[in-house]
Image (cartoon, each protein chain N blue to C red):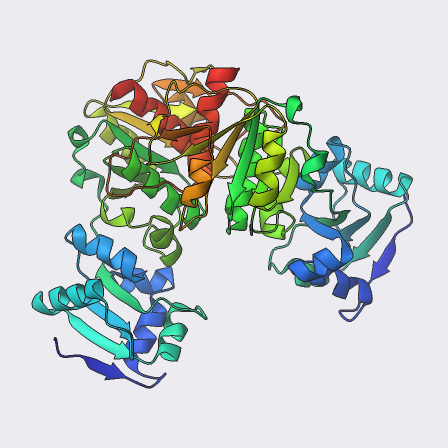
Length: 267
Length: 267
């Protein structure tokens, strides 16, 4: 069993630090993010990602996955902390907190770090504001075997607690890049890559459209959709049936329906 | 211009009533729900649904859609209220509130009220707990031309502010029914209807599966999925590719990918 530090006071600096990681500016300043729950932390471990700091509720039941996690964190030189459940609830901001959370170093999110030939599908989101949608896109990307998610312009923070949670572990399997459109488009054009968007303008049916790998599936902002010039820059514009009153789908849903169609075409 | 009542005090009974509608027990007691924003209220109006009570921020800019809404509410015998923007912010619980909200009577959600022959696709959710997922499924249902959404067992409230918002107006176009599984299954078997679920057990590829109208697309709870006996009761179990580590999609995403496949088969 690894050595653990026990924290009991609400004013403890570590508690303050953990709480601060719920806010983007503090995450950026520290270069760290928080992931909650044994399932998520086990997913991370199985992807070779260990928390630098592991926080557990004191008095917890023994659990083989938690024991394994604790041992690996200690072996890797990470720190293990115990705190009272009510204190952990303050950290996670939930009445019924997960019995464990971990602090991870944020990953490199440079476009240059992506290997576009490593996958047939890449998801791209522009100005996606909802962290739940962002996490859901990561999860969908994992499911379709995408290489990663590229976040264009001002998106929600992929390292927010909400996005990490909604990703169901995919934040640890999918590459993530952040870029302005002005950087992304030249980067894309440096190599092979078909940019595809769902669009109502000058579009072909999304079923049986001529998708090509590596295919970059682009979805736009939740309320405004994609800017018109972004759509025009796409190699392929496809349209999905809209049988009802609405003219659009939820952004994460649109991305998923399209990504599964691309997968069926390219797989 | 209709006659408007102006409300200025936070302790006004109408303000208290409006705030109470954010909680399910008060919605059920009153049989009313809240929809926020001019876009949503205009969608409702175009579907022939008018609020019984229309609440507007005082000092707002004139807007033709809002004027039309106000006139119709007044003509239908509804009430129109003005309140200071900061008071409206208290009602909507947002710093930056929409300038208008409306109170609607909840709809009948009996299974018996559904006309299954009216659509080729119906969405069915079991123990769906997230109101955002529920609203997203309504929105997807509208897009695929579904007849409505059937909520099985203990689901989130379709009349919650979050579900109504995520539905993007589809709460006014889609039929909604609520039932226990023990009621739903006998009702389904009384007439034509193919029950289809995404499943890992004894399933065929979701692409090109033998879908039949009316097709009832069933998705399960966000964390537990469907109970095994519910899956076994389905006429068709289909599986979607899972190329990554995860073994499931977000519930609303899974429902949408499947519903679009059913639409392509039956349309």
